[in-house]
Length: 86
Image (tube, rainbow, N blue to C red; front, side):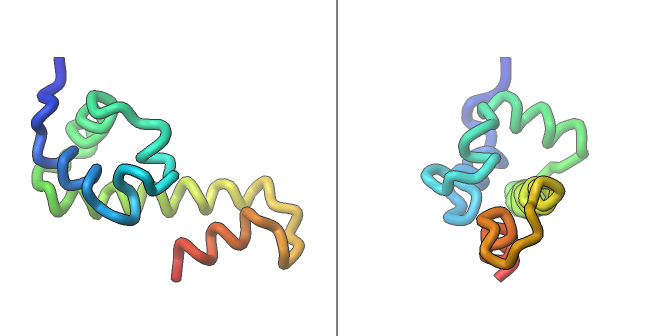
């Protein structure tokens, strides 16, 4: 069983961009134990590195969504990606 007090998860969950209430893939799709598993697999050891990992992961998630974009300037997938980058 995963350590529910893992400081890496605490750092991610408290980050305003990817943490609780952010409506990101990290917030909505990952359980704490899944985060720990992925962080361990990727060799992420510190809370700071975990937040960096989560931010990068979310950026990739949004970039992949562009594959389903219509390409129109008002496409919400493009808007979401651009908002994330800014």
